[in-house]
Image (cartoon, rainbow, N blue to C red; front, side, top):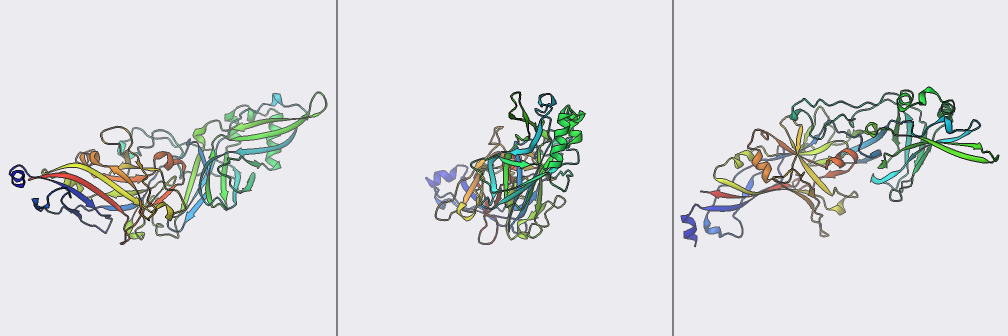
Length: 454
């Protein structure tokens, strides 16, 4: 049988196992015959494909109109801290002087926030949030859609407010609240405004002031609110359904006390966004900035991470892979990228349920989301959890179409960004640090099954 096989064009099915390989630490891809084959067929050369992995800081992360107001701070010794301040504009909502009796007196003005059950960090500790009056107009950044695709991120398709934008607000808070989060019960939080701003607003309402005739006029006078974390250990998510309630009381026609309520609310959710700040100064990631976005794993003790809202992703490159795919004697049958992460029991934070890959141009701009092979659906790799015996969890991607496309002009000199799905990238603080091997290299491997013709 072996002789008959050799008389034909000899074919070998070979699994190509790429050990984790990174900037300044290239390793060989070793080939071996498929275990189901007779290894007396013969030997083949060992192809070498170098890879490099680094942590990369994306720019222009849109955090407006996500449906989640993110407030708080979270930190760890490896990657540093991230802090989120939520901004919003308010419209006049139900405010109307016509329905307020002349003898009505103000009881209170209270901002009501409702948690959306998202949190990230230590929620066993007491948290504090301050509410500040914004003094600068909250504006969107317009997007030039005439720019070439490789000059703007694939996930930015219209005007937005980005995580790095910041608008001025008064130093003295209008209200503040110290609380212990009860995330799952979703209890509303009530921030009682100070008497100065409360009396000012109520007087305007009763007098039918021109500044509260419509939302545009009101926003010229009251530009918005900033929810600022103070002494926080966790990021807390709130619904973007916000009410600034005006409570008042009056005597009704029977001469007994009655109460009434009106409220301001967010009139356009496109102007609600989360402003993100990170502090990595005490970590190996301190050199990573927007001006210097890429940091090799060898400079961070082998640590590579990705994180929501800050726009941090893991960059994966295969500089010599093109040589393999352009080899006319090779037909690639399967390509699987496997990323290992620490066993879930090794971290107090739950790992992302899925990850995605972005295709980045040679200038570092993410130009597309990797789709499932030969389809238009974004490929999401689900988390396969580690077991009780300490084995790592993993995410696996099918790269067969990507390997085909890197031979084309459109995908020439591209790389891959490992990222949270865009929903998590724009509205959470979820973080993932990749697993490392015994040599302190992140555990990533590319398995390629191919047929070799001779």
